[in-house]
Length: 243
Image (cartoon, rainbow, N blue to C red; front, side, top):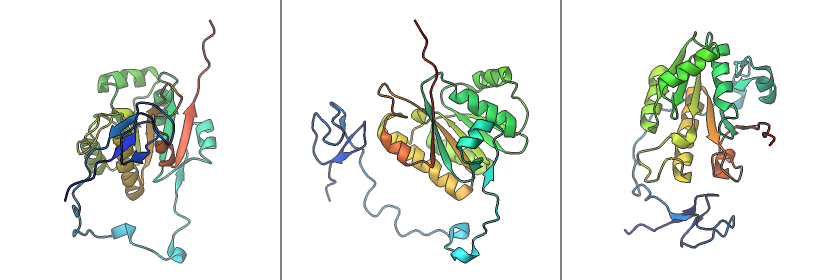
């Protein structure tokens, strides 16, 4: 059966059956592009996997005493997170390049690295560059693992092997899924990569901090759809220089 061609807006994510010069949802011009082909119908069906800890449970049997938060050691960050970061949550850290997102997350690594296992995935710097920046901040001890990678499959495999309690993705625009025929940073790639990290965070119980740069309109990681996928959005602003 012939597959139906779909188009989507790279700005807001709205899908449409026809191409047009202007998105009818957000009004942006020249943002409509053809969506990558979907997986074949029926693909992946017919296979089952054990439910394990994800099996349905009675609400009366759920353990409310289980530790679901941890303190990051950054007082203001703990405050805006409602008393610490939640296990199994995904936090979007947005802001302009150079505003201090990566610096804050490295400081977090230094504060909790002695009691948490951290995987820092860098797609914008080499491991050596990241270490040099960490040394300037006095961050060198603890279970802080660094992975310089942008391919989603390699990142998820590293998470499975390491079983960290905190995962930092810096940044989501650099990640790509080989099964999605779109460039890194596009709405398709950002959405699929975020979904994959979110699924792993929920099942693995780790906290994910995902860095997203803003575009010229001030939207985090480009499409607004990303802000609705995560559990929390932290937006960083710096003082504009005076001329």
